[in-house]
Length: 77
Image (cartoon, rainbow, N blue to C red):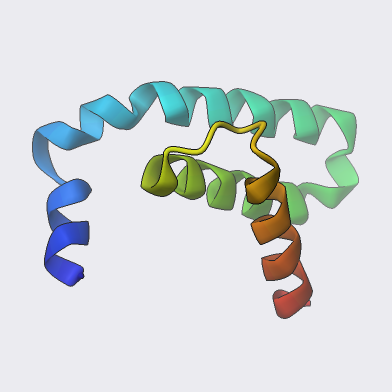
């Protein structure tokens, strides 16, 4: 698993993730502008969303993503 992750997140493969990262950054900025007081939650949500999108190829609108993010929020807090 570690080798697969290393290969997936190094070298030329990183450039292919840029569109997903850019979309995630725009969504994060929108959330921050909408409710700046919850910046810590927004950053955690944004990072997790980008990672789920890259790892599982889920679109940001996928309901599975929100389910996972809600679960991780529950576990963390």
